[in-house]
Length: 112
Image 1: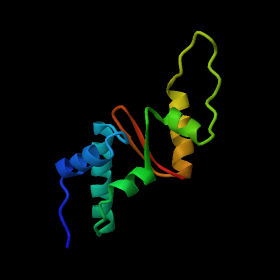
Image 2 (image 1 turned 180 degrees about the horizontal axis):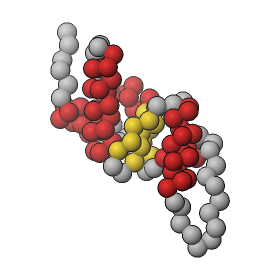
Image 3 (image 1 turned 45 degrees about the vertical axis):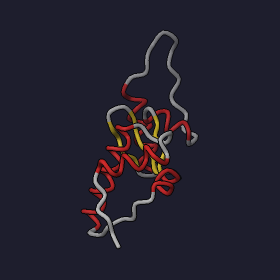
Image 4 (image 1 turned 120 degrees about the vertical axis):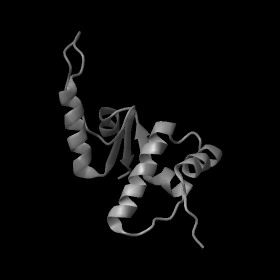
């Protein structure tokens, strides 16, 4: 027996069982990513909240995510702010290692 999972049902399941794992924007991005993946592969995926929480981690940005996996951001001279170069390098590092989903407010990384 299969059930169609709408975006509302997807987000509601996380809010009831694992509300601390992902922000709402991250859940919307993950839902859209999984739907696109199903279309591309031509097969349905199983909806398992616990499995998705184990497989994916949300980070505030690519730099934070890459540093969690051992990447070292370039030193920033005192008084200066990070520019987009560090973020691009962090994205490249992650894309070489795993799959990620960018969304407004952060990134989701498939744990590796």
